[in-house]
Length: 227
Image 1: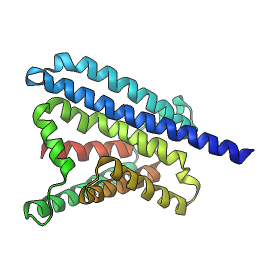
Image 2: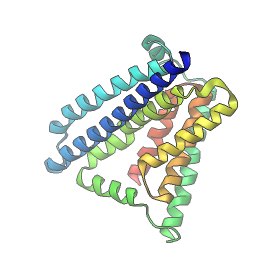
Image 3: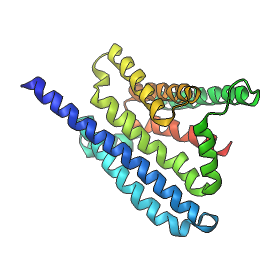
Image 4: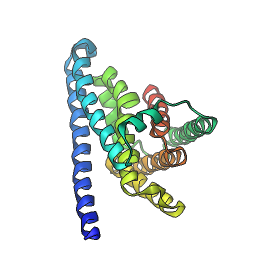
């Protein structure tokens, strides 16, 4: 009976996770489309819609994160807004440093024409040209929050990453690979996103605080959007 319940619970969570991921894609597309239609990306018109759509999505994901990690919303908020310790700061800096090294290496290979520019990167550049403000806000702020909640906050906790060291690394690798797959079908870009997922997963599992992987994700996306 207990095994049957685990199967049912896993199926329900899988459906919920897929539904939330699709909702994220729809919200992202709706906001970028709206921003592109407004002259010079008029945020006075776009911003209210942006806040409502992403605000509702993030609130739901935070609640699901609390459920998946089997903690209360109050405890989750207390942990999120607690003081940073030295270990957290070191890991955030380490994670961001690894991203920078990898990105500079990737840019060098592309500029030297040793590898082609991934198709998804070209699409992001086109979206940025059409709607620069909404694209930057999404890439540097809301996307890291939503994606960390989806992948590290919900998915990794559902797979009980903290059960053992071996299981932790298995879960980090699997979630990182999924993180790469949902972002692109291009092999080179998949390797890039999978590497990012490995770094983010490691940061989260060491500190146990999602805010740390969110900050690393934000720093990385902000720099990439500005380059």
